[in-house]
Amino acid sequence: MKVLIPTPLRSYTRQREVDASGATIGEMLAELEQRYPGLRFRMIDEQDRMRRHIRFFVNGEQVFDMGRPLRPSDEVHIVQALSGG
Amino acid sequence: MARISKKKPAARARKGAGTKKRTSRAQPVVVLVATRKGAWLYHGDAARKTWRTDGPHFLGHIVNHLVLDPRDKRTLLAAAKTGHLGPTVFRSTDFGRTWKEAARPPAFPKAPEGGKGRSVDHTFWLTPAHANEPNVWYAGTSPQGLFRTEDGGATWEPFSSVNDDPQYRVWMGSVQDGTPDGPKMHSIIVDPRDPAHLYFAMSGGGLHETLDAGQTWTPLVQGMEVVEGFDASVITFHDPHCVRMCPSNPDRLYQQNHCGIYRLDRPSKEWTRIGKKMPKRVGDIGFPMVVHPRDDDTAWVFPMDGRTVWPRTSPEGLPSAYVTRNGGKTWQRLDAGLPQNQAWWTVKRQAMTADAQDPVGLYFGTTSGDLWMSRDEGQKWTPLARHLPEIYAVEAADMR
Image (tube, rainbow over all chains, first blue to last red; front, side, top):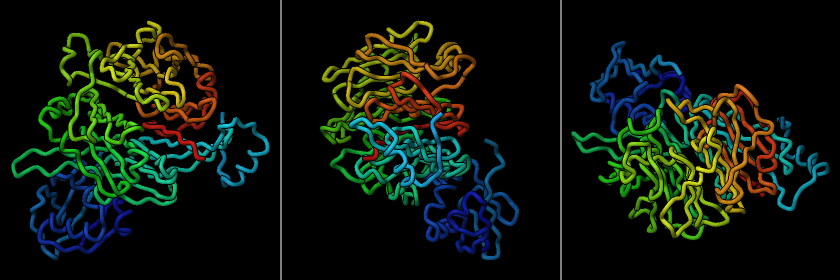
């Protein structure tokens, strides 16, 4: 599946868009972590909770569950919340 | 204002060598500045008059602490996060030319299914371990947790004896019991005579000591006052802001607390409130505490307004450091060179420090983003850098 990476995380991926695999959001992130060490912890805390200002969208729909199923044709957008400071 | 240059260090060193009078202790100094929006290094010559700026590093990152390893004078650790991304630790082994992120930053263990585990919001404090323990560091986090690395900062392990101890969890309180941006573990101190003898402090949650490398811990709060109306026997209510051990006498500790300035001379376990001798209109509330590298009777504080709603500004808009030269019996105001009216900034707990030169150089960073220095132990202040982001931490290291 295609995963769009927000600018704050491109120091890890060096690209705007990466291909990833995994049957769920959690598996997809684990696969990305293998290739880009440190990336996952910046988005997901040690209790497997999505960090407060990180958002995941699958085909335009916001998702909150790490177990949300994914298909190879899905498009995942990772975005940072529009919060100031 | 101190001269700032971006020239190569070698060129400046040659220029400085022939023109500056040096004391026997004179050596280059580097000042490490951590801010709300990145980190900067200021490389000074031996006279501490010409400075080279190196930065920003991690522009846009909230950097709570940037520390040089005194054991090799080359390795830097930076505790960082952004407003959106989670916390991490960056490490450089070439004095900031290149950085590598920790493979496993400080993090609490995953809670069992159905349990409610804690998450590190940010690493707040970094302390290199004993001189005989290369690559070992300690970290304090918010919410409060103590961590240790044995591989120079690549992987960090939690201290279960503190982080998971039911009594300590009570003393730490909840997120609401800490400072407005989260409760802090700080002032992790290693006894230079014994690597197993450590202290740490919690805002709030008191000061604690171990004699067995962290297997067991004991509160050390006797004599410390708490907010009026609360019970001082309850550890949770104690709020040390910054604790320092005297390099020339590791049995002497100084402390700036939410409720005053204190001194402790071991083996005594009772703190003495030495801030009562501060001028009444200034009071003895503040955040930083700085000790002299060679004289255990000399220490500096930077008071702030802790009245009414705790404005956390300079008292009456008149910032000043204060020094004691006799262990806290008397204090003198040190404000020459600082603004003389309408200056409403203050100095955070990690944002004031000393070098080891003779006379001692002092450095502090303000909440308004200015970096000040004194080459004469606070007799006169001069700006070293201006218009930085809010300064969270300042460290100084002598480079020879």
